[in-house]
Image 1 (cartoon, rainbow, N blue to C red):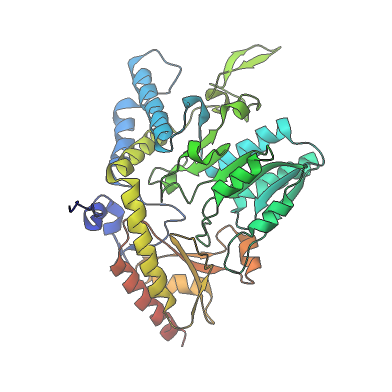
Image 2 (image 1 turned 90 degrees about the vertical axis):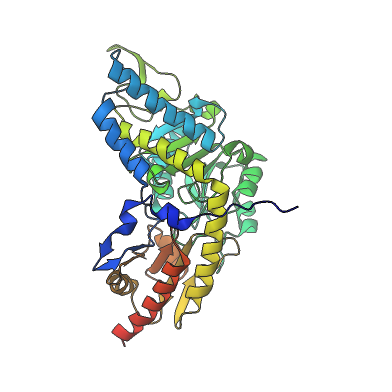
Length: 411
């Protein structure tokens, strides 16, 4: 019996993103910088505009109608996040400014409560600076040590080395799910299982994962997970920290101010319940509501369909671009997605990006906030193409031809 197979209609989807129809230097925009930030569908843009036109009011504090409606819309977005990655309690969904803010919250608050002199924290060689620097700052403050899981020449973590790094001094592990500079997908479930066998909590940086495939935090059993809304087709300046209640209850507040308190006197302050204990001050209300709309949009398409389309698109891009003469891929992990980093013989990545821009092609060049990765491969920078479900094979073909023209310019 034949069954219908749902196929992603990329041309229909592209109509939902106004910016994809702009011209750059008179050429149609080819947007391949999705690892830096994704473009926003019209429904998200309109939802933000609608908030400021019809609901604009502060939340959680007002008894008037606008405040009540804004609060309801804001908290509905939190519920959408919970369902999106299958958390079990709303109290475990902390709204932040983004991945960087979320990781800093954990480093500061968990570190203040649980890390002491002589303890060790483990990260990997693949980390973004935002999952390196906060732990360095914590280690300097506490007299703790930062240990790093090495990677091989393909850009994969060496799991055996990770096992050897763990000791009775290890008190926390923080690793990226998908590398933003290489596209490597880390074996986070195995990392979590090994860590938990030693009673060590784990944070997952999901900034480059949450938009590409389904994540179930209960199945992963991670203790913390962070992501940014702007990588998820939502507005900038919003993000999420998921944390297990047993840790969040014990952790002190990250910042002081409005809404994170229960009562304040000059003698003593008592703190609000979760999740509000970690949400000081007026947030980006419109952005959070917009993030809820972005999640609705992705759910309507289906994350499984998005994941399947992007996998096929990446395999095509990997084959097509790798065949370009004098092009060397950087990072060839067996399990990778979305990101194709490369070098062209004798040409600086910034020059590659500049020439491609004249054809309307937007790529990212530089160290991608992963300078240790660049040092590992002995290069100052890469050119990076990063894909989304609104990209096409035709755009990849056009870019492959444009890369060949780069050599003509510098010939």
